[in-house]
Image (tube, rainbow over all chains, first blue to last red; front, side):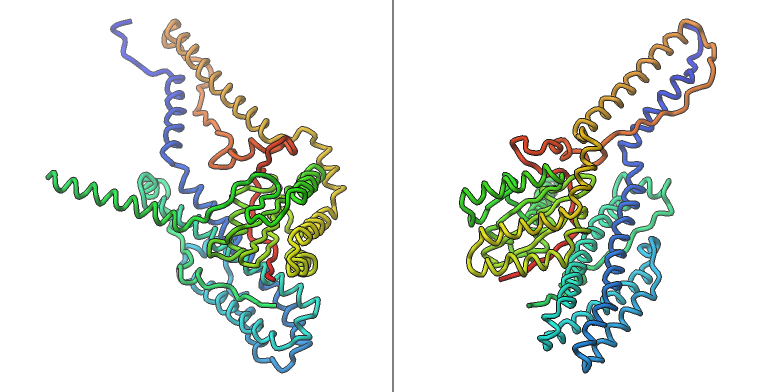
Length: 202
Length: 266
């Protein structure tokens, strides 16, 4: 026994492989992909809510048209802003492309602005304001704006976790070895997030 | 040297304090979830509160959804929309998988009211329906300072709105009579622990076998075995306490909120 060379058996090797796997999991080897998936899911939430808003607009424009024919200019602005925002194709890769991300956000912000102006204009039409259809649309629009802001904040939080993981130890090691294709994600700037959605008084 | 390290320490402590201060400044404080009616602002009398509690408990037994009424002393400077979804997430109202929870939030001092709708109820208790309930049932009564009446009527309307398909809910609840996530989680944990112990034991035993039989190779080598760990980050915790409606204490079931619902002021 004493003069034999120590050769680890397969069982021992596999045991240590398991152990190493568990230890690596403890070191956060899975963190980057996990955070990446999470942030992408939050991004699709943001996209969904913007899409939902875009879907509501044609109905809103039609309803307003029936009451406020002379407000053609504001209505056209809203329609154009919506068309522009819808033209931009976005997917999960948009978040790592600063130019594309900014383009998408600028278009959505322009739409937010146009919608805000429309809702202010509407204040001048009491008949429209008491229209049931309009009230329902308006509450849906408000709800959507609120969902957008919640989705944006959730996205900011998840991107913060992801980007921090890429830049801090031990994620830094994995980012420079195993996960080189993972890039930092774009996020909303604070100034944008502070901007309140248009609020409407009844 | 010493002086330098002390300065460094002081700076580190200062940084830490700054972090704590920033965190404290950002986070909202939420009232404790003492029951299905949390009357923090004190606008409801005891009998109304008890009646509401009963109604809400019955609602949960019938539909497995959770509905909570809360009155707030203060919105802490933020909007009721912002406070509302964070409170819903904090309390985790609604069932974990279905997110069927809703809050009726009243802030008498700010004269604001909101129906905060969990993801699972967004299909039935839509923004438009919530707005109608607020404008038609709640606000007229609040204007007359009748908080009990407004809240009572609001709760009735919410229950009606989400109970449109209550029969379907009941059928689903019957199909899985012992759907208790707490128990399932526990069993899963025990199961994986059992497997882990078995693997460790078998490896130890086979190792001994090898020592006796020399370096003889056996059939197929075992590859790496990765053990999944149930209930990953932050998802288990709350579910342990759910699944026992009406059992004395009340707690959220792990539901989440995404800003659905509507608000109003009076």
